[in-house]
Length: 304
Image (cartoon, rainbow, N blue to C red; front, side, top):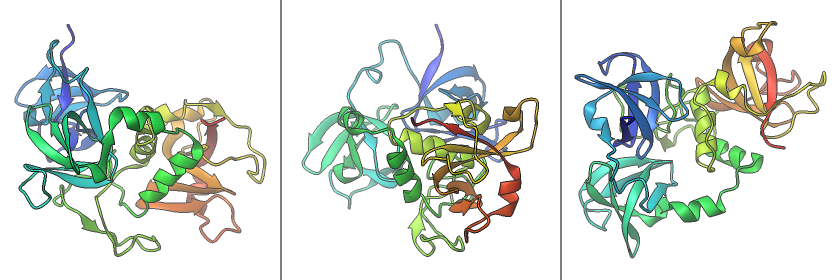
């Protein structure tokens, strides 16, 4: 029987080696299932829909037993980009943990303005209803389409880039804190937001928060949907098309993919490069990015 577990932290950083200072390969979110590949001082895992295999601290994952109630129980999902759970149904009580969008917790009870929940490791807490929703209700109202994907993308504007980040929280000495956005030109400059994600992690999170599940890395995402034959002025691009950038490899363009963005309209796209912001492929646009335009490879249509 396959050894599996459930991510136990709001954001679980998956490292190349058994050391928190080693390269971060990817991130898992609270409630995600993972295959456990090896147990040593740390635990080697592979997340669902993610080719990366890496190491996590043993407290970051809880083993899933065949009779575990977690799999078939009702859950809530965190819908706000950032929040907290508490020991009592009171935001002034002791904090249990931080939470980020896409986190899932087992639902035990609904009490006034809070859900009573259980973590995979059996900790119990209260989550404000204002930052969460019952998962079955959330699934019913989800609309996985270009307008909703782009609305989610725009809500993340200004969050900084970090390699391996797939959540609204990254990993450095500021891990677990809200940071002031200082990205020049961003509409969120001066505000305080959770910290960090990379280009493909950004796109994946936009899908996840609208009920979609897509692969982790940009070269995998480049195989979604249908390849477009683009006109010279890019007039046949539609909102929600996925744009891919990198090294030109004529024999197999996917092998050259290094970066991804989401097309908004008229050659403008939103992406995580330095921070989440908007650029354009067209020279007459004030947000034209010449370097990225030189690296532009192709576009895929996911939404028809």
